[in-house]
Amino acid sequence: MSAPEPPRSWIVQLRERLASPPPRRLPASDARPAAVLVPLYVDAGQLWALLTRRAEDLPHHRNQIAFPGGGRELGEGIWEAALRETSEELGIGASRILRVGELDEVTTPSGYRIVPCVGAIPWPIETDPSPEEIEEVFSVPILAFANPRLIEERKVLLDGRERSFRIYHIGGRQVWGLTAKIVHNLMARLGMEPPAQEE
Image (cartoon, rainbow, N blue to C red; front, side, top):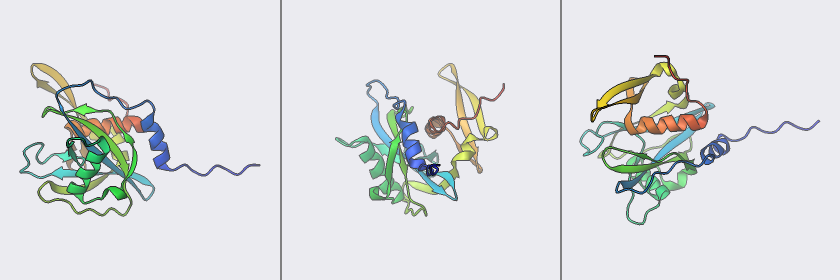
């Protein structure tokens, strides 16, 4: 009788889920290329995501829940931008982040096209947030995003068209917009997307 196989690392499993099918990329456009890091870690056997609340006096997306990131500099790759921005915003150096994979590219009304990069960070978490950019750093268990009771699909009239926006209500905070899109894609890749709620 052969010995049972050891449990596979969550990082290996997530890498496989992110790689197949390949993440979607958008057609060429005038939108400014950018990248964010989706920092994940395991504590007490549970997967967590690290998020920020942006400072109130920033020119764009002020006071919103976001992943660390920003515009790519000339000649800079996706991962280089995500890691640089994470270092600048949270004080987490590139050497402490293990590259896991990427999610679907998304756009913002402010004119950015963003590739989310998923990275594993070590526990315990050590951050040194930039007070000019970051108001708060906090963690959310991934399972919370899978709870249909914490998800609101809000219909909004925008430019004469009715559109549906997803909002995650987590611990008294609202995760919406670009960050909610990224979370939604991550949960789908993890196979943890909750079923659609009945109208």
